[in-house]
Length: 132
Image (cartoon, rainbow, N blue to C red; front, side, top):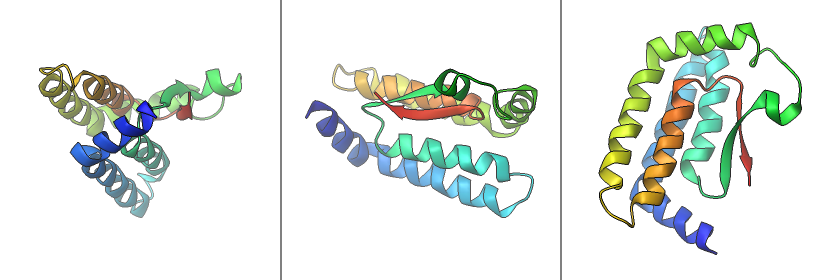
């Protein structure tokens, strides 16, 4: 019940905007051939951005127990390109919002989720969002 209440508060206080931003980014990336590998990652992040409480971000290698394209050398290369072009400023935005949220005691759970969003924004390839 607390997760539901936190998710509703999150959604009202910025989760809707954050999730729509990630969805839009995924659509724009999907339009280009070069951005297609990043579109799926952006949509996974959007799902987390809408309703983050009760979910966790894990490496796909840990989840499946084996390597795949996103967790191997190609995934590292794609994450480096992502970091240079978009990841650092998206993460910076989430960190700045987290600092503002952490000023109040009530905002601390939201700040933690924004820091998780910042973490996945740095390197989204090879990561999955799973329920706890």
